[in-house]
Image (cartoon, rainbow, N blue to C red; front, side, top):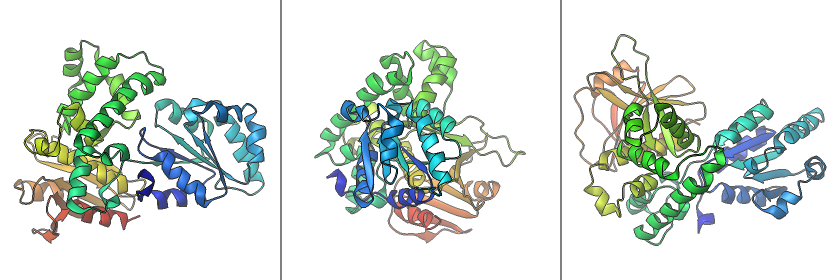
Length: 393
């Protein structure tokens, strides 16, 4: 069933391949990178190599010679972080091909976005590689209306959990994924980390969804140093498991919150870490509003134009805008996020939009209609806002 999902990022990936010698498709484990690459492979003259398969790794015992025999194809290298010595070889082949006038469509590199992969590729392929981040499923990829969106929100964007037969199956799938990260993927970053401590930290961040985080308090509760906690959080961020959003500081005359916010990126993982068993239980849980906020934030990030930057805005008195998107064309989109079909709006919403210099002003809510509420502010469903963002590509 996973191959039947129409992934929104396909067009962006094809365009990038047509323009660049090497493209790195980065994403968390199990978001669908391999499935997407195999769709690409069917439509192009290509070779696919799974570098977790020992037999296929044998083909690269003399990688320079082998890859030269494939020079007229798009070579797809899956889980390339398993063979880090390939990066200098790719650089030499790309430079050789450029001298012959071939400047695009040579290598598609897939990998979980670990720190080591990003460092190796940026050092070896600087100026030769373009990065595309693949998220989980978003609401524009669904065909089943409100129920589909509710399932996506509760189960999260991993195809394996979204396509599970029921919520119980989704949570079991996500528990297995969490354990794989903690017991396999994180140790492969090269750090000696307690899986138990990391899970506790991850769960603490779930309880603090969308809030600023006091790392000193976290360190004290975990009986770890603040430096260690910061390192653990960097690992979770680099593996695309949590999202860090910096505060907006354009208005220097205001006393503003200066600490970043953190979100558990996948809403399904959030609910599994918090032990929420089904959508009905979510509706009565205190995390409801922040869960919806994180779900909206992640969906927006899945479609914003490349080179966009995102922030949040909050003053010391509590006035805030949940998400500020600075577009590549310098437009500033101010986005407030509210759960429900008749949300109560704060009295400061107009002023905070003005303070960030918002050129576009939206309140994302749970209803299905788009309508103005004054001062160029629009109430809007999530899918409609995402349509507007995709039109800016």
